[in-house]
Structures are given as structure tokens and as C-alpha cells.
Image (cartoon, rainbow, N blue to C red; front, top):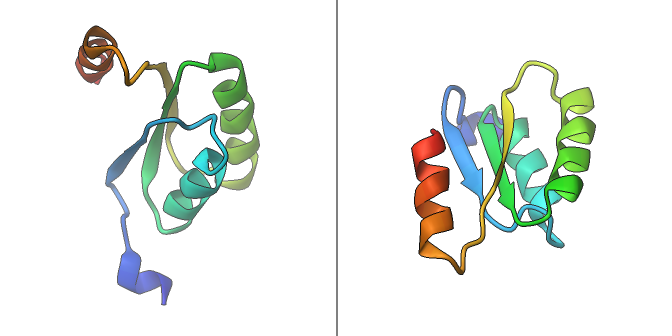
Length: 82
């Protein structure tokens, strides 16, 4: 079933990554081959999630970036990061 959702060499950005489902969404995307970009205003928590995910998904790229989705400048700054 996972081959149906192959996201190898694709990137997924997850907003609100420090929230209730951020970690689970990231793990699911990593499981089907995606690289993920975790964004949130809580950098401490997404750094923690990144470390946990890197221990499980060793061959995937995981990035973290501060982003406040209620502020247009923050979204633009995040976009320019990549």
C-alpha cells in the first residue's frame, strides 16, 4: 500500500508542526519517502521532534524553520529560506 503513496525526492512543508498532529503528519510523510520541513513558532518543540524523527528516519532530510502563519512577513521569510 505504501508504494501507492511514494513521495521519494519530494518535499512537504508542515505548518503548525509543534501542534497535536505535527509529529504524526511528519512521520507519515517520512514513511512514504518525503523529506519534510517543520515550521512553527515553537522552535524548541520542533527541534525536539526533528531529533526524534531523525533517529527513526535516518535517510530523510528534515528541516526546521520558524514561521508564524498569522504574519505575512513570516510566511514570506520562510519561503525565501528555501
